[in-house]
Length: 112
Image (cartoon, rainbow, N blue to C red; front, side):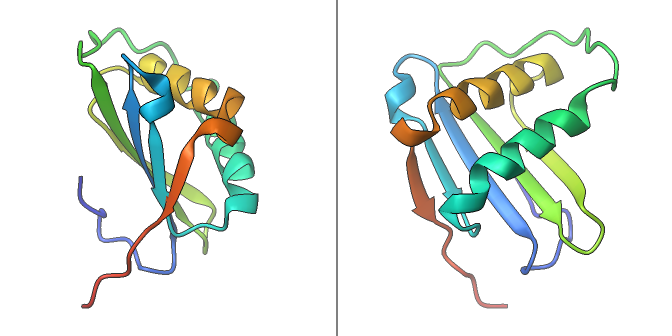
Protein backbone atom coordinates (compact mmCIF):
# COMPACT_ATOMS: atom_id res chain seq x y z
CA UNK A 1 0.00 0.00 0.00
CA UNK A 2 1.64 3.19 -1.13
CA UNK A 3 1.13 6.65 0.17
CA UNK A 4 -0.69 7.96 -2.93
CA UNK A 5 1.86 10.78 -3.11
CA UNK A 6 0.55 12.22 0.15
CA UNK A 7 2.78 14.40 2.29
CA UNK A 8 4.46 13.11 5.44
CA UNK A 9 2.61 15.59 7.69
CA UNK A 10 -0.72 13.96 6.86
CA UNK A 11 -2.22 11.52 9.35
CA UNK A 12 -1.68 7.87 8.50
CA UNK A 13 -3.33 4.85 10.12
CA UNK A 14 -2.06 1.46 8.99
CA UNK A 15 -4.42 -1.18 10.30
CA UNK A 16 -3.81 -4.91 10.45
CA UNK A 17 -7.05 -6.68 11.37
CA UNK A 18 -6.75 -10.31 12.40
CA UNK A 19 -10.10 -11.99 11.78
CA UNK A 20 -9.21 -15.20 13.63
CA UNK A 21 -7.98 -13.41 16.77
CA UNK A 22 -9.19 -9.81 16.77
CA UNK A 23 -7.05 -9.08 19.85
CA UNK A 24 -3.99 -9.46 17.59
CA UNK A 25 -5.19 -6.53 15.45
CA UNK A 26 -2.90 -3.49 15.48
CA UNK A 27 -2.88 0.12 14.36
CA UNK A 28 0.40 1.74 13.34
CA UNK A 29 0.02 5.51 13.11
CA UNK A 30 1.64 8.91 13.26
CA UNK A 31 -1.50 10.29 14.96
CA UNK A 32 -1.72 10.93 18.68
CA UNK A 33 -3.66 8.19 20.45
CA UNK A 34 -6.19 10.77 21.65
CA UNK A 35 -7.34 11.55 18.08
CA UNK A 36 -7.52 8.03 16.62
CA UNK A 37 -11.14 7.50 17.67
CA UNK A 38 -12.19 10.83 16.13
CA UNK A 39 -10.33 10.11 12.89
CA UNK A 40 -11.96 6.67 12.54
CA UNK A 41 -15.42 8.08 13.33
CA UNK A 42 -14.93 10.87 10.78
CA UNK A 43 -13.75 8.32 8.21
CA UNK A 44 -16.88 6.22 8.79
CA UNK A 45 -19.07 9.31 8.41
CA UNK A 46 -17.33 10.11 5.13
CA UNK A 47 -18.27 6.66 3.79
CA UNK A 48 -22.01 7.12 4.41
CA UNK A 49 -24.03 7.70 1.28
CA UNK A 50 -21.34 6.44 -1.11
CA UNK A 51 -23.63 3.66 -2.29
CA UNK A 52 -23.59 -0.09 -1.97
CA UNK A 53 -20.45 -1.96 -2.96
CA UNK A 54 -21.40 -5.19 -4.72
CA UNK A 55 -17.77 -6.30 -5.03
CA UNK A 56 -17.06 -9.72 -3.60
CA UNK A 57 -15.11 -9.48 -0.35
CA UNK A 58 -11.72 -11.17 -0.21
CA UNK A 59 -11.75 -14.08 2.21
CA UNK A 60 -8.63 -13.81 4.34
CA UNK A 61 -7.61 -14.33 7.95
CA UNK A 62 -5.90 -10.94 8.08
CA UNK A 63 -6.76 -7.67 6.36
CA UNK A 64 -4.70 -4.54 5.86
CA UNK A 65 -6.32 -1.12 5.65
CA UNK A 66 -4.50 2.18 5.31
CA UNK A 67 -6.36 5.42 5.97
CA UNK A 68 -4.65 8.72 5.27
CA UNK A 69 -6.00 12.15 6.07
CA UNK A 70 -4.89 15.18 4.07
CA UNK A 71 -4.98 17.75 6.85
CA UNK A 72 -4.97 20.68 4.43
CA UNK A 73 -8.34 19.65 2.96
CA UNK A 74 -9.71 17.10 5.47
CA UNK A 75 -9.76 14.54 2.67
CA UNK A 76 -9.52 10.80 3.31
CA UNK A 77 -7.58 8.35 1.15
CA UNK A 78 -8.14 4.64 1.75
CA UNK A 79 -6.33 1.53 0.56
CA UNK A 80 -7.42 -1.92 1.67
CA UNK A 81 -7.18 -5.54 0.66
CA UNK A 82 -10.72 -6.38 1.77
CA UNK A 83 -12.16 -6.25 -1.74
CA UNK A 84 -15.35 -4.64 -0.46
CA UNK A 85 -16.06 -1.22 1.07
CA UNK A 86 -18.75 -2.64 3.36
CA UNK A 87 -16.27 -5.10 4.85
CA UNK A 88 -13.76 -2.27 5.31
CA UNK A 89 -16.39 -0.22 7.17
CA UNK A 90 -17.34 -3.21 9.31
CA UNK A 91 -13.71 -3.72 10.32
CA UNK A 92 -13.36 -0.05 11.26
CA UNK A 93 -16.59 -0.22 13.30
CA UNK A 94 -15.26 -3.28 15.13
CA UNK A 95 -11.98 -1.52 15.88
CA UNK A 96 -13.83 1.50 17.22
CA UNK A 97 -15.81 -0.74 19.59
CA UNK A 98 -12.60 -2.30 20.89
CA UNK A 99 -10.15 0.58 20.54
CA UNK A 100 -8.95 0.34 24.15
CA UNK A 101 -7.97 -3.28 23.55
CA UNK A 102 -6.10 -2.69 20.28
CA UNK A 103 -2.31 -2.33 20.16
CA UNK A 104 -1.40 1.11 18.82
CA UNK A 105 2.15 1.56 17.63
CA UNK A 106 3.98 4.67 16.46
CA UNK A 107 4.61 4.90 12.74
CA UNK A 108 8.33 5.23 12.13
CA UNK A 109 9.35 8.19 10.03
CA UNK A 110 11.20 7.30 6.86
CA UNK A 111 13.95 9.41 5.36
CA UNK A 112 13.31 11.00 2.03
